[in-house]
Image: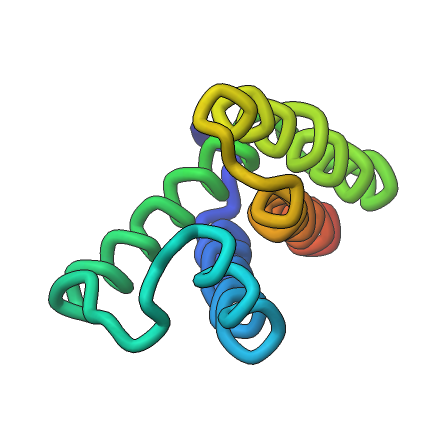
Length: 130
């Protein structure tokens, strides 16, 4: 863990948090709510718990990804590894669950697309900021 740039990890986590705000806000909120069967106006709990928990989980994911990349990853390797991780591990794993849960392809594309971009951003930030 000595090789991890914790400021870069913090920035990567913040990038995922900001991406999520755009992705699940103005870009895909209505479609996601419709496909997930969620009332877009309903409250799912206290915002501090939800947003705080989401940020902590983003921070954990960014730190583990930084550890996985190792010290001073080349930018192209870090970005490609992020895209492959998001699509090949996270989105594919969601796809398995979504198939068994009977969830729609559209919902999988929204959620899997977010995580593919999330890890691609992690790779970009961690590849640039050593």
